[in-house]
Image (cartoon, rainbow, N blue to C red; front, side, top):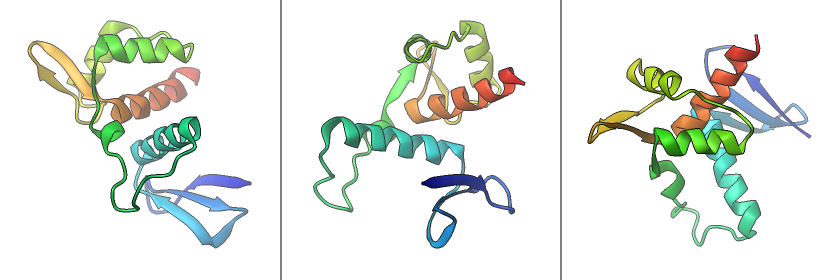
Length: 125
């Protein structure tokens, strides 16, 4: 069994196996946890490891999506995200690395996933 908990210092997340400090993975923030989740899902879907340890696929990290795609991804998870809510989140910097491109907002997929997870936590309260 694995546990995920916040480190006492700040946003750092610790993933440990049965609270064994020798087997702990430290992640800088929620965005890194989401990126790891996406990579693990990709691995489980194919059951193929990366060819070399230093050539981890950056496709997920670099994949840019627009707001329509982001809303579709959320809907696939059973979550409705209002277009204006997402645009405001992008404009205010809540979706990390979101930027305007040709009059539309684009963002890294991992950043949207991280924002969505945080957004859901806030709306459940």
